[in-house]
Length: 247
Image 1 (tube, one colour):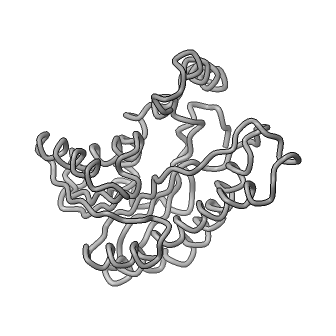
Image 2 (tube, one colour):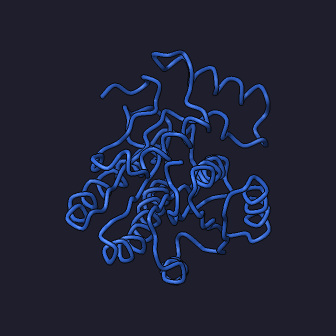
C-alpha cells in the first residue's frame, strides 16, 4: 500500500470524483478526513470506507469559508495530503460575450477562493512537518467554446498552483494538478440518459485513446501522486486526458 499512516483531507468528498479518490486513498492505507457540507452523506461514505477495512473521519466544512476550513485543519493536526474536489456552478452553453459580469466572475472567484483557502490551511500544517502534498483537479487545456468562465477559473487555479509549488517546495511540500478532459462517469444522474451518453461519446472522441478517463483512473493516479513514489514530482500537471490535451 502506498499511503500507509498518511493523513489525507478530501474536500468535496461526497461527489463522484471525491468519493472515488477518498476510497482509493483509504485502500492504500491513509486515514481519510472526509470534508463536505452535509453530515449525513459524509457519514454514509465513511461507513462504506470502514466496511471495506479503511479508516475515515468526517467533518462538516464549508470549503468556501475561511474560518470553517482553518478550524477543521487545525483540529486534524498533521496533514500529509490535501485534495480539493468541490463542485462549482457551471454556466455552459452561453457565449462569453452574452454573459453577465456576475456569472463570469462567480466560478473564477469561487474556484480560486476554495483552492487558496484549503491549500493555505494544509500548508500551515505541512510547513511544520516539512512534508506534504497538495493536489488540485481539472487543469487548463485548450479553450473550448461556450463553457462560460469555467476554464478561466481552472486557469486561475493553475497560476496559483504554480506559485504555491515554487514557495512551498523549500519546505518539502509538493503541489500538483490532475488534469483531465472530463470524467463522464461523474456527470449527475439528473441529466437525461441520452445527454449523458452524448457527453461520454464526445469526450471519448476528443482523445487519442478513444476513451475518457474513469473514476478509477483518477483515484489510482491521485494515490500515486500523493505517495512517496512520486517524491520528485511537483509544480506540474499530471495529464489524465487520454491524449485530448497534448503537452
